[in-house]
Structures are given as C-alpha cells and as structure tokens.
Image: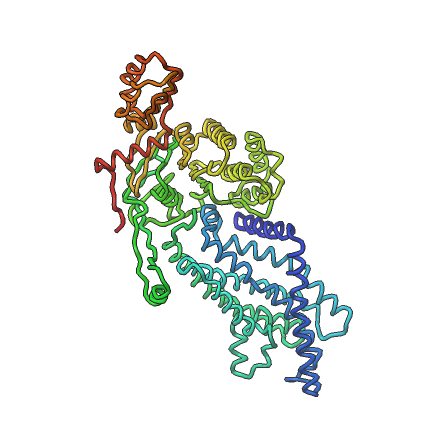
Length: 267
Length: 337
C-alpha cells in the first residue's frame, strides 16, 4: 500500500510540475513527435518515389508511412533521456541528498515521476496519430492499441532501470552525460525508431527482436500497424522481463557500490 | 534520559584528485591521477541523550556537516560504528528515515516548481501520513510561522526567509524524533533569524525532539543549545555546556572609554590589552578577571565622558579558545594523511 501511495504521489508530482509549464508540455507531447513523424514520412515517401516500385520487403508504401507516423510517438513516450539527465545532475550536484534522507528510494521516486509524465504526454500525444487513422484509411488496427501500449509501459520500466544504472555511475565519475547520449543513439537503431527492424536480414533480425529494446518502438508499432502478430508481442514481454532482471541486478550492484563512495557532495 | 545517538570511533576519510597547474598536467592526469586522502572526521566516540539541543560549532571544513551526514546515513563511515534511535544509519531503513529529519540550510529540499502545499501532500504519501493529518499539521505549523498565505505560491517565487519557513514545515511534518538542522538561519536577515529561533524554541517545548544544530550565527547556538560540541580539524575539542565553555575560553570584555579632554595619562593603558589608545579615546580588550583592576585605574580620571563595556561575540570566543588550545598543543593539527 505504502509503495503504491508513493508511486501515486510521485506520478502526481510529475503531472503537477508539467502543468506549471504549459508551452514546454505542449511542445514535448505534440510538436516534437509530430516533427519526427513528418521527417520520417517524408523520407519513406522519397524512398518509394525513387525506387519506382509498389512494395519494399513485402509491404506497400502505406505500411511504411503509418509505421513512421506511429513510431515517432511510441519513441517519444519511451524516451527517457530527460529524466536520466536529471538523475545524473542530482547525483553530481548533491541534490540527491534531499531524497536519500527520505523513506523513498531514488529508483521509486524517478519511476513514479517517469510513469506519471509519460502517462500525461501519452494522452496528448496519441490523439494525433489516432485522429489521422480515423480520418485516413490505413492498415492500422486501433483495437490492438491497448496491448501495444501495455508493452510500451512495461518497456518504460525496463528503460528506467537502464537509466538508473547509468545515473548510478555518477557516484564514481560525476560527469557521464556522454554515456546517456551514446545509449540514446544506440537505442534509435535497436528500437526500430529509424526504420522497421524487419528490414534487417536474418540472423540479425532475430537477435534484434530478442533484445528488449525492440519493445520500445518496433514491436508495439509493428503490431499496431499490422506487421507483427500477438506472438511477437508475447516475445516482447518475455525479452523485457529478462532485460528487467539483468538491468535490475546491475543497478543494485552499481547503486550499492556507488553509495559506499559517495561523499554527500554539496550539503 | 536514554541515549539517542551513540558513536564508537566513527570516522570518514575523503579522497580527492590533485591536479597540478597546466595543460601538460591535465594530459598526465587523463592517464594517471594522484589522489590525496583527507580526514574529514577523525575517530569520534560520542553519546547524546534524548530531548537535548546539541550545538555543533566549528570553522568551515571542520567536520560538522560530515558528522551530520554520517549520523543521518547520507554517507558511509570509513571506520567505526554509530547508532541513532537504535538503528545503524548506514542501513538507511525506512523505519529509521521516518524518525529523523535533516534540514540543509543551503539546499532546497522541497520541490522548486510547485507550491509548498503540493510538496507537503507528496511528503505525506512518502511518510505514510493520512491526508487530513497532513493538512492539520501544515495548518498548525504555518500558523506558528504566520505563513499561511504563502502555502499556495510556487516555491521558486518565495523569498529566502519564506522558503526557509516552508522547508522547516516540510522537515517537521512527520514529527521526527531526531532533527538535524544544518545552518537553518544562513543568509537570513536578523528578523527572520529570530523568527526561526523562536519557532525552534516553541517546537522544542511542545514536542521535545533531539536536535543537532550547526550554525555560524552564534546567537543560534547560545540561545538554543543545552550542550556544545566544538569541532576542529575533524576532532571534537570541546564537549560541555555553553557557559562553561565561555569560562574556559577566558572571554574578554571590550572597553571603550571616551575622555572629555585629552590627557597624557591615557597613554599608560598602551600595554594593557590595548586595541587603540589615544589622548581622548581608549579602546581595550581585557580578560574578564582583569576587568576590576582596569576599571579602578580608569576611575582615577576625572575627565571621563563615556564608558562602554561590550562582551565578546561567541564567534570570537571560539576563535580565542581554538587559538589558545592550538598554542598549548591541545588541539590536533596536520590531520591530512
């Protein structure tokens, strides 16, 4: 009960804080993913125009256009670099002291905020692709949206754990923002944000699908847009579960060691 | 009174990277670094009874905040053990964290982007306090502070003094049994400092927590503390009450005598603790026990216009104490290892 109260409290904190800065919230939830979608859609439009053929790897242009539309929004919701930077800054500057002295863990505190913020932006963000799909005929099956979003939010917990591991390195090295950027660039490729992972030849495709990162964008978007089936989503849940176990173990070790060397900077 | 805080040889050593000046040394440091260890707190054994206010004083970098960080579980000790309320602070158990509170005067612990009422609502959930009880406690504390009007204003828009009141309410919301106050009045004007001191006195009288208080404003310490711990270069060099300390430090009185007309006899005081001596103005700093003799000599002048006697500030007393004890080799030096 206490855990859920804390999660609710921190999620509410994130929502209340975001509502204080309306323009920032609007740009983050709507404008940024919209720009991302338009760029990717323009890219696929140009590829099909220059190819001079109706299909690519068995899918028509419409499949790629709706994939580009949805992938950008899934990617925005699963992206957590902003919270990762905040966690790193808190450790580097010693602001974390205020949290370490309270009966809530750093992991819980940021997980609650991250989920709260992503739920809020998710509500605003998904209105755009949903509206487009209701107006324009597309291969999207909106009935699949709840399962796709469930996988996305399960993935959010995993990616938060990865962020927690990286932020905990701050106890040892202080400035580690470049690690976050390197991780983000890798995730662009591994998650399928830049292009659908089924374009990758085997056996690399199988490896990518087994990695939990594909569950952030490719699996939920592919399932929603008709490229993947329920069995692929189930595989996604399994790979994220495995990823959670591994990242959770690493996080516990790095955090414990980090706390031992921490000097309580700035207090 | 039961012991609330017990430490046994508790110490902390920090390692820091030393980089000599210059680009070449930066390049060398990229591949190989030299670290230096510094004792922030030498092995310390301490017992503190419940319901007391402990004034922890010392110069910057003396080790006050390190001791607070160790006792609150913020950092791990290099050696030794500690127990606060029966818990090992280093375990950071939620049951322990619910019983203590730490107010770091130079850091915001409430949330910058939201109003204090929203912060208190979150704190209520973190400390597992019912929402109605949170409201009741906030109302009670805000009334003592006369700050009810500011509860709904975003924290970043409040003045420093107002923010400190809000921080104190946040720190006391869960009724901690042990309260660590690290510089609670730093940067505040005299009126705001007095408000905070009055509040702490009232709170102490009502709830009787154990308070560990550090401050650079000696009025905080002399007015609130039952017991004084003076810390210097990582070692506790005095442990006793404030009055005894003042006696041991051989406090000096400042005397300023203004004469109605210039007199050559005034120059006789040049050798007696003189700060400055002129034919019309004598400014002296005299040990309390020598005050009688000086006054009887001054009384012989029949041209005295004004005499002012001022007691040394507590900060000066500490300075005197440390200077005297370092001179006599009673305070450790050269703690760098």
